[in-house]
Length: 224
Image 1 (cartoon, rainbow, N blue to C red):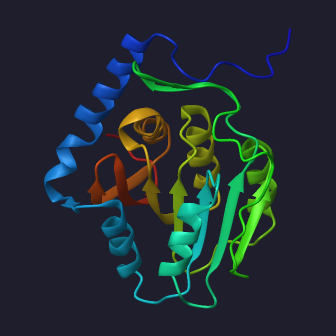
Image 2 (spheres, rainbow, N blue to C red; image 1 turned 45 degrees about the horizontal axis):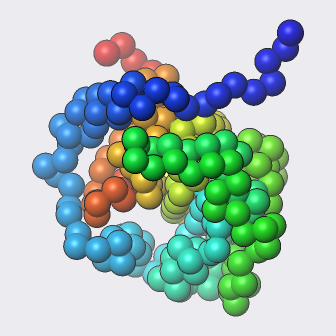
């Protein structure tokens, strides 16, 4: 029997918590002393914007929902030549998301009933559908790449989709900046699994709470 889709998250909360703790201890804490700690999410976004000093950028957001973060970032990146692409099903999560024992969001959570956010900015394009279906043809279309900085905002929550995005981008983008919105939960496990399989160099710059800003560069594989 062919397998078309598997459960992507660990249902046992104790095992999931252990995986999160291991990823944080082995993959994040050794770098934490060099990371700038800011006081709010707004300050973190200001910090991100300052790194590019008015340059035109390409911004990809995974997990748009009502569009509040897309609106916020577009207001900070003012260069008229910047481009923003927002990926979302707009009908909610495709699977249950349970980042820890006291929280569980069911299938369909975060739905906006298939409606795109209304944002008065012609630089923004929304890509509707399941990311596993929409991202590969988008990347093959040639709309991104080149010398401009690329900023990737991971706000998709799920381990499965986060890992899919990381592994798919590796083949198209040799260097990009990332923002992760729920970093200590499924995202850090996905990032740990990605780095274990794909040769990359990672740098962390700043954080606030469970949000993190850094950079990923593709590098040649070499023996440890």
